[in-house]
Amino acid sequence: MEAPRPRPSSAEISLVLLGTSLLVLASPLRVVWAQRSWLAPFAVWLLLVLLAAAAARSAPEDEP
Image (cartoon, rainbow, N blue to C red; front, side):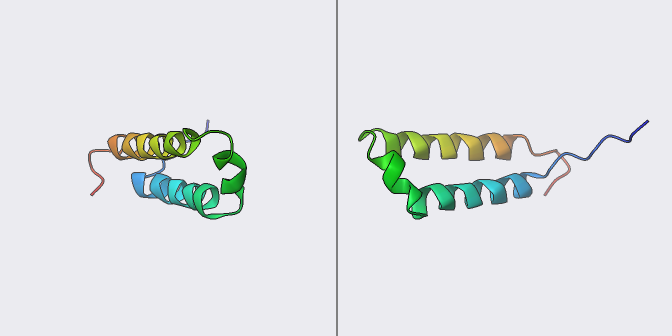
């Protein structure tokens, strides 16, 4: 039987979110999704904020 894998820390999740947001918001890819609608950039920012909040809330109690 395998031992359960440890959950990723909130810092690891935040780093993945940071890298993804930089890719989406600072690369030439932003031209693709930003031309869809004026609402698209706000929806992307809201999604990133909600994901960051979920990562912060999912942190174990013993994590600093």
